[in-house]
Length: 205
Ligand code: GRF
Image (tube, rainbow, N blue to C red):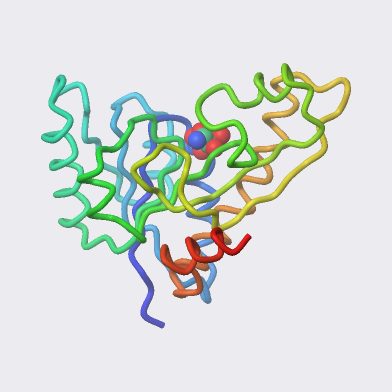
């Protein structure tokens, strides 16, 4: 099997990254996690990746100041240096410019802790509770220039309970995240989803 080389981009604890690393250990998984990149030196996920034997690099956005283009060029160079085919954003807290998004178009996924297209943006669990929504969930989608707006690859939902807090709700959603991200990367690596096909499906709905 010719496995795709995937990179996971993180900014924090990296639990989704670990779910992808674990899934990719299976013999029949169509991707290897070939690289983890963090934009912060202090991301706890870096050490978890290294403990798992995965090359882990830092491309520190702060080093580039306001120069987003230079940061993204450094990131892109790192991905190319490791011959990366596919990119998974997993708690990566930088907005990407249209240049970077276009470069990785159809080859870059993101995970968002809400049932997109509802609750784009930050603090989704709190906002779901405040809105009194009865269901919540997680979505893996293709990355397009508009934030949290790309065609959906995988989505799962859970019921919101009366006694849920942000902590209990986010913990249940995180379990879903860890299930759906490996499924989504598998589908992309096997060529079962593509940006055009997914966009067509979204239009047909
Ligand atoms: C996850 O909830 C993900 O959906 C969101 O940021 C969080 C990252 O968590 N984009 P982790 O670093 O994967 O544990």
